[in-house]
Image (cartoon, rainbow, N blue to C red; front, side, top):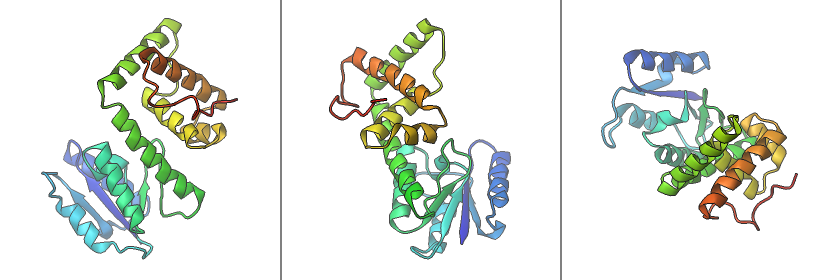
Length: 211
């Protein structure tokens, strides 16, 4: 059974668009709950939704994008993990990497792994050192006169995925780029990290960048 959740971003029209997207994805209108405001821990729509979904009952929550679950990336990922652990599916419609944890098999496991990696990615880029790494990379790209196809955050996530044992082909497919583009972007990422002398994201013994 599909349930839907929408949360206001900036205007009432935006909320309507989210609801329409959920309906177009097959979620019955009567099973879509929403919130127009998010004050502290109080979300009436979300709390009502959680009273309806049942663990391990084939229930799934659909949102337009993952950031509708909360106000920070960490909060969204925590909720996504909790739902998965409870046997409640989660589907996103418009993220760059849409997920559906209700589908059994490697795809669902990969989605959960991606969520965990993106959580680590956010922690890395909260620090001033992360900001310096991005600035260093941007300066190098500008000097080369070309713009990378992957953002600094995507490069960090890809590096984590390779370190965890995923193949270059799997990672490249996940980000919608070619294998050569993936490794070219990872080269830029390694050089930015080396310029800072951190070594905290990818250690030589962990890296699996062999072509």
